[in-house]
Image 1: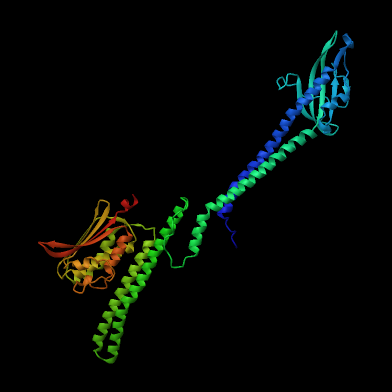
Image 2: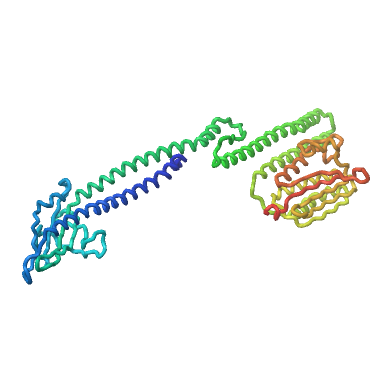
Amino acid sequence: MNRPRPLSLRRTLLLGILLPVLAFIVVNTVVLYRQALAAADTAYDRTLLATAKSLGEQLSVSGTGDNVRIESALLYSALEAFEADNRSRIFYRVSGLKGEMVSGFEDMPPWRTDIAQKNLYAALVNFYDDEYRGVPVRMAVLLQPVSGVYEQGMATIQVAETLELRETLARQILIDTLWRQAALVIVVALVVVLVVQRATRPVRAVSHALAMRSENDLSPLSTDGAPRELLPLLDATNQHMHRLQHLLEHQKRFVRDTSHQLRTPLAVLKTQVQSAQRGDLPPLQALDEIGHTVERATELANQMLALAKVEQLRQEMAVSVIDWSGVLRAVALDLSALIADRSLDFAIDTQTTPVRAHEWALRELSRNLLHNAIKNTPRGSALSVSLVADGHNAVLTVRDSGPGISAALRERLFQPFATEQNQAPSLSGSGLGLAICREIVASLQGEIALENRTLQGRVVGLDAIVRLPLASSAQA
């Protein structure tokens, strides 16, 4: 199934800004229309009240006693002055003291609300919406005191006005407001488009720069002129490119070193096989030399694979906590046959030292150091191994009784294939053992050093010292 394309940053910002603005405008329009109607009612209610008061001024009381009645001298044509532009009509009804019809439109519905005790006007008046002759109207009810020569009373005056003018005014206010709000939305949209276009320019520049690069170009991206929000992405990208560059260089170096180092034993092996085929040497001697060459080539291949595995483990972030002392004792047990074969005075002293590492890395590190020390220690001499927790570090010390290292070799000691012809066997082999140890220690954020041990100015052995952070310290 095809997944929907994700929204672009530009469209996301546009929707995120314009949708709330449009929602606000819709709500504001509804509220504004209601406020416009209320404002129109307030304005034109004054006209209704003025009409009702005009009607009240034309009322008089005649008769006395039970014959008291209210009379009106107002003609309907007098109300034409209150009808605005002939777009609205006014109806009225005047009721007497007992609700009897005095003048006006007899079929007007009786008023059905209470007179508010408090209102905006200094009169006993109330306004409400009603319907007359099937048309919505605005109704005003005024209780008008009326007095004559001998009597006085309270007349009820109802004035109704159709809503055309009010609705026209409210719609005009609404339309004028909508035009301004539409112009505001257009301005906001243009500003957002321009701002988003400018804000996303660095992103497009980075995208274009990456698209134009060759597949082998892993140089850092330029951060000049980049906004602060984009710097974390550029820094993370540069860090990732740096790791890829390091991995690529390691692979190139590995392929180059492998092809260079395996070429020699393979050439020697081919020569030995040809010599054996010609019968230059006795069969057993030829097989012995071939086996020795195959053993050296196998050891070289295993070491180079170990070196490649160290780089692979370096890329893996999740590692477990392992007690280094258990791994070290297991490695010493595996190499016990070599120790016994050389009749070495071997001693091992360990403490519990939890470190955060892969078990293979600790095993390979311990095996390389101990194996080098065994090969470098003269037959029947002393060899000791100690592992202690020193503050925040686990410290491994391997002490042999060999000839140590020369000053010339010290400068390039941990480089791959760094050997010296007159050096002891441990340091004149393939030259990868110490390089493997250096890579493992570096991947575990530790330190490694080889120091000559002297007595009265004479080298009596070599100390290999490794410091790795304890697991508790690494977590802290």
